[in-house]
Length: 135
Image (cartoon, rainbow, N blue to C red; front, side, top):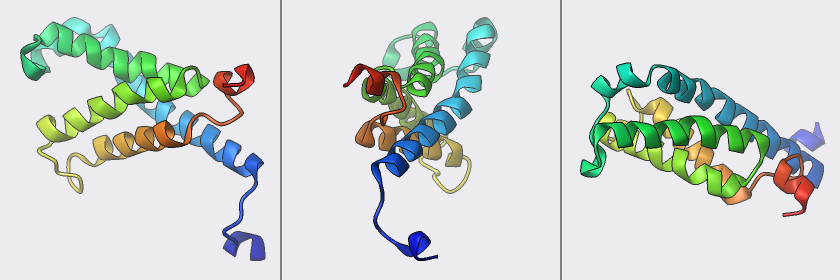
């Protein structure tokens, strides 16, 4: 019981927590990106033209962020760099798509955004490709 109330942690617990966070956040966002990838043409009709770069380019960047970057985060490969595009994409979704309604319809986007921001801050942990390479 005292261990549950303690503020101390071991490096093993930290690394396991980082692995669990990477698997959860990346694994839960990956299907969203995969769906956009396989139904690319159909999704262009519902996509916003972010900053005037075009609907196709906006959707391609979103697929990159949601699918490929999530895959890199799950593997722990270039993790901090790979966490930036999905965090930014979820901020744009929260801002443009949900009018910053964090406690309403934008709740999922906010959770993903903060999850990727935490990964960006703490890094991948030892149980990752980055950790195996000694980065």
